[in-house]
Image 1 (cartoon, rainbow, N blue to C red):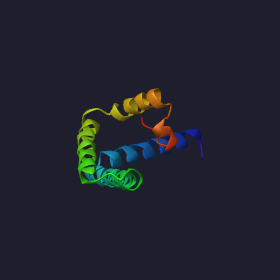
Image 2: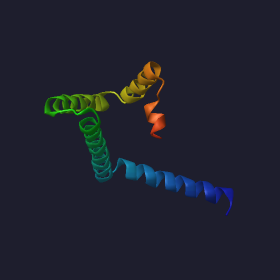
Image 3: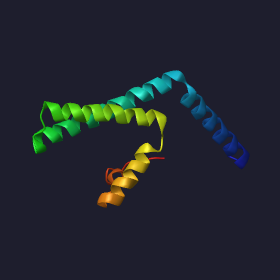
Length: 105
């Protein structure tokens, strides 16, 4: 396969990927997956707070309200969680996202 053929194939693949990413069905499916992941993480957090720290209804409700507010930041500011992670690392020395193997663009 010549370099021209390889370049053409690469262009075709990139074009198809861009089409898929712009597809409304794909976006909706991706949003559902993101919501599912976030929901699981929220449940894990609440479970930890209940078991480890004996949080009751009032404190869990306060935490869930806080989560709901933070989700608004996701829609408004893509840099929010990256900056938050940097601030937590500065205060505690723990890079939460790095420790979990998560890379934020």
